[in-house]
Image (cartoon, rainbow, N blue to C red; front, side, top):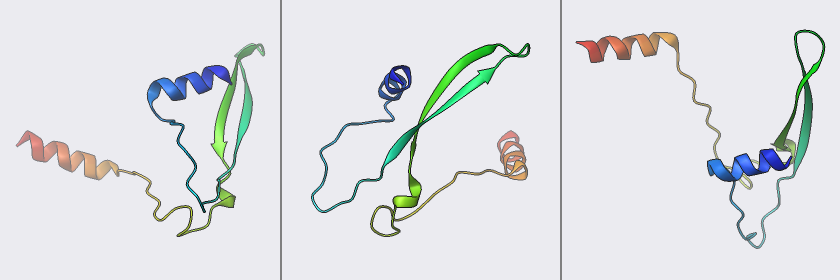
Length: 84
């Protein structure tokens, strides 16, 4: 867990801020996984910090969701347009 927290801090994906008055906290929990190697030995132990999204209320805790997805055809078209 300490390795994961240090990676989050080094990448700048996590900041410690003061809690605004009148807002609710979205909880989080640690998820652990054991990665098994090809011969059945333990390859590594992984830990992830995930948010409990089921506690969020639309319009109160968040406004919009965005998932960046690009289709293969769009990438090809962009490459062809830049090549001309």
